[in-house]
Amino acid sequence: MVVSLELRCEIEELFAEYAAVLDAADLERWPEFFTDQCFYEVIPRENYDRGLPLAIMRCESKGMLRDRVVAIRDTMMYEPRYLRHMISGIRVTGQTSHGIAVEASYAVFETLVDELTRVFNVGRYLDRIVHEAGRLKFAEKHCVFDSVLVPNSLIYPI
Amino acid sequence: MTTATAPTTLDRRWPEAGVTRVPFWAYTDPQVYEREMSLIFCGESWAYVGLEVEIPHPGDFKQVMLGDRPVVMVRDEQGAVRVFVNSCAHRGVKFCRAPWGHVQHFTCPYHQWTYDLQGHLRGVPFRRGLKHQGGMPAEFSREEHGLEALQVTVRHGVVFASFSPHVEPFGDYLGPTMLAYFDRVFDGRALRLLGYTRQRIPSNWKLMFENIKDPYHASLMHVFLVTFGLFRADQPSAVCMDDTGRHACLISRRGEQRATPDTADIRNLREDLKLHDPRLLDPVREFPGDVTVVLQTLWPNLIIQQQSNTLAMRQIVPRGPAAFELLWTFFGYADDTEEMTLKRLRQANLMGPAGLVSADDSEVMKLSQDGIAGYTEAAGVLEMGGHGTENTEHMVTEAAIRAFYQYYRHVMGF
Image 1 (cartoon, each protein chain N blue to C red):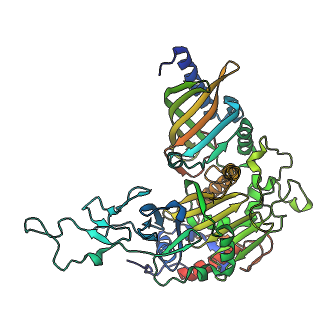
Image 2: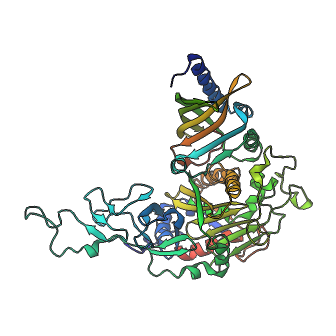
């Protein structure tokens, strides 16, 4: 798909910012990458490939993203950890009036404070990106992960 | 192979205090683990295998682990559910490699021995030799070299299997009380499979059962549950067991998001918390009566979860003394409306490896194992609600854990 250099740069910048915010655990900024009526899910590949809808995180609006953040900050009990996102192979797969379809591969490394760093979650983003008030935002983000066996718990968004 | 034989006698003595103590070596000792795999998972028990809806057509199969043993659940040509070992009768190869799928027959990749959907050996290449050389001895009988089949029982769409030919009928195994709670969720309606999730938790498998038999922690640790009243000590609740103590149910009712004198010890109740999108927690009543949550633990490997409208099987697969896999199968009913399916999918945010509630549990189970592993001569204390193992009409009790260990000691000979 032919995409202008400018748009390509803009999309790469969006992913770089997204990763930076998550890696810094700056969770309050995470919902701002999305539209109000967004759809976000983290779904095992075995479900996605078979058309089974069950996701391990499912947010159907920016409000639900915020609720997830509040829960992570205020209600959930978990060990401290660092995450690091590597996003690559960003490519535009379609452009319609509904937005830009973008796919990318990701790998997330997790470091618990007293353990060796491990590959925590690997998969791909299947996204729909739209322009909103001069910025690119995610209208849809499906994190389809290959590593279906989750090492213990998945606390932070992918 | 078939039924288990007990490993050599273990030099372990349970503490004098009985079921009010759990020695920490029970969570760490490899010999204890080996005995558990034989006597509990492959002994006189009905282990959960899967749901019929996962294999709707003849030839559909799913791989499953029962304890340490790989098995295959398959629907045969006549429509019956079969469970047999996933280990070739020739040299032991785990012949079925796909996690699920559809086959006409199973062929081992190593020497291409072929089995039909009932596990009978149908083909042995070069059985008669080649150019009058080699081949199996004349007396080799295919009938004697089929795949070892397990006992299978199916109740209202749920499949259980046993390595023991002497296991009691399933209804007796559950007992009337547990059977009634089982039938509450599995009332004969066709199910709809919603999907899977799996996690590997770095703790002993028994800690998972303890967790779901422990209403005491639920009211304290799970701020999300407590705050939104989904499970809270000030609500009318109950803990009940079967006659043996091996199975249990935790039963409760939803309450309001409001502090009362009874919630004074629940420091984590957050009256101020409001959801930005209330659709996340918008349950509707779907079962008879006013009970809104029943968590049923069935010996040796199953938790049946009904929390509001989120329904799931949680299957426990031990992976050595210090780890287990928890395999979640979420489902609804075939006659659910799309709105109901959406509720189930939204409420699934509470559960699984990223669950707003259950991630607390996987995290704390790791901390348990971390704290236990270095102190194997110490023991855990189970005295909340007294010393007994009887049914209880409140949540401030560890009776169901004591009941579990009473039966555990009986099976394990401790």
